[in-house]
Image 1 (spheres, rainbow, N blue to C red):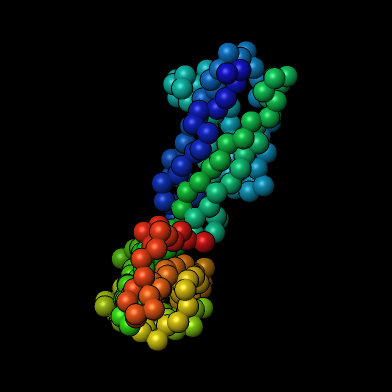
Image 2 (cartoon, one colour):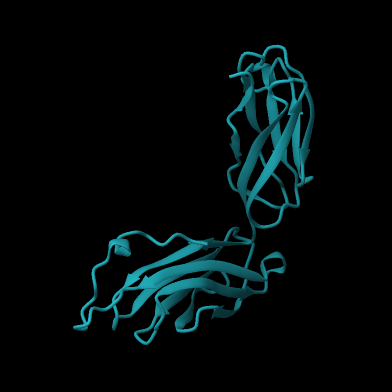
Length: 226
């Protein structure tokens, strides 16, 4: 290996949009040219991500040669950005590093992907989504809940006034489609989280000619989220 950046994916712990990343993350150069190559520039479409290089290492740590930070203002939700690292190596040229993480808003949502699993015909399956305030000084209201999948029912319960809500998502017995794939849309009064989207997915088990659920090879395979 001539040159590489280790790790190739930088993962930031969840942080608030207003503060940016609380602690930087680091990487180092590896490979036969790592001791002599120069990094000429960094490029990223997201200007909130900053990158610095110090061959001797930041904070006196030789393994911390490349420093990554995320500034305030990143939109709420998960992010994945690509950083292009241009070097003066004729063999390695430009390297790529991925920067990922999650930005927290006033409201936390769990889960962000809602699997319904494989549903037997004639049965009703219910799963739950929980919304909570992320700070003691924050209150919020859920104004509306809807689904992009016809036949999915939603029911909203305020479990702690202004602080916590529970949404029941049910696939009714009458739901007639082989694959369930769509979103639960949650409208709130939070300025930067007015519409919260939760992906929902599942499948309806096929029936045999006798009216019993049919066994199939793909029955055991989970349906991946979008």
